[in-house]
Length: 112
Image 1 (tube, rainbow, N blue to C red):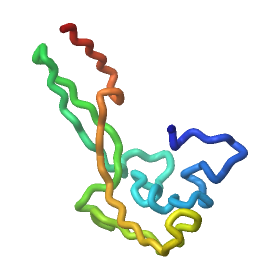
Image 2: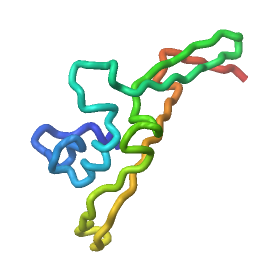
Image 3: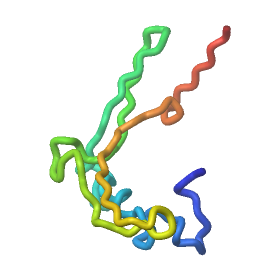
Image 4: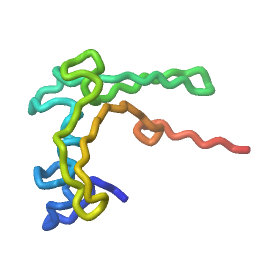
């Protein structure tokens, strides 16, 4: 299921909305809150080496680095998980910068 796709009339499925129940988890690790500026974002680089000895460096924006404030782990406010666990919960969230081959322009097909 694509968590980012939702019907425009259903704000309860919009994970960027203030009304979404885990919005705080999501928004804690957005690259930054500065609009129209890219020089403040943390960038990550993945170096890909192909079988034919060519290299490609793929740079992408990601969550704040571990050395930046507020650090590698953020705690959310306690919330009541109504209708599921029916308990008060606190979450610890940490960024995971990851890249898959589908995020690059390179497509490779191997024949047996």
